[in-house]
Amino acid sequence: MKEKQMYPLYFIVPAFALYLIFFVIPGAIGIGYSFTDWNAYSYTMNFVWLENYAEIFSADKNYMRYIGNTFRFTVISNIVKIIPAFFLAVMLQKKLRGRGFFRSVLYFPSVLPYIVIGIMFRSVLHPSNGILNQFLNTAGLGAFTQQWLTDPEWVWTSVIGVDAWRGIGYVMTIFLAGLQSIPETYYESADIDGAGFWAKLRHITLPLLTPAITINLVFGIAHGIRVFDVIYVLTNGGPGRETEVAATVIYKEFADGRYGMSSALSSLMFIFMAVVGLFIVLRMAKRRVVT
Image 1 (cartoon, rainbow, N blue to C red):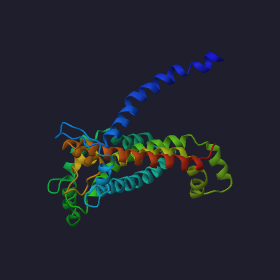
Image 2 (spheres, rainbow, N blue to C red):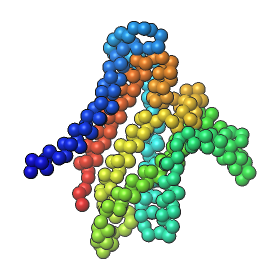
Image 3 (tube, helix red, strand yellow):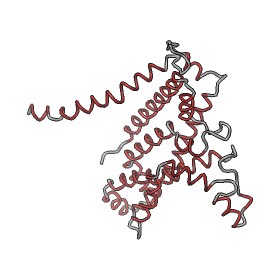
Image 4 (cartoon, rainbow, N blue to C red):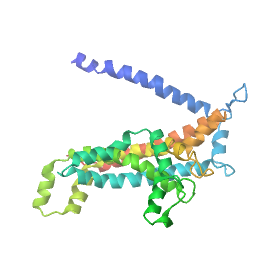
């Protein structure tokens, strides 16, 4: 009995030690640097305590605007991915001809790196030579052509649309895994009782799909709060600084040699992500229905 209890420790202790060395300790060091004036232009590093954080929340700076852009992207991108992905998963769960093909096609964009997607969509959305505007002109819909990546009124729509194009298939796959774990007998009983599609969706599918919904929400929020690549590749924070988000500001602050401020922004976004993620997990755990 003692050997059975000790056996898992052979795996847990090394894994915990590696996690501590490569993740916890560097994270703690980064938080420590956020209380300093560490920069590339001085040989000394002094503790300034909360001055970096005070600067972030200062009305004279634009940091809160960029953090607001981050949360804006997080909320909207999750909505435009999770809702369509859910209904796609429900449809493709049914025994349809070619459903394997459609699943593969929808999932394929999620395996492409953002650098490839960025180059592709910068060509597609180019104002004069882009495929989208050329198609609209050819179809007699020239009035709908836009400066997709340079017009402040359309740039967020374009960026979130590209992110959704890449991510919907991944979210759908998680929902499909959740749907396949729901016993078919529940739906058969509901059919006997005369329940319609929406009744089964509300009383069977959604409650039993809580774990998949939780995973997609947590992953989606983590992706939104740390979003960098799609913004950097498509707009680099432009036009002006319209699409600047926390991660691009962190990168630019670090590139400018303001390491202490970059660490403070990183630590703040990490805390936001941890708090929001934990809140969602705890809330959804209360709603979980055990089959």
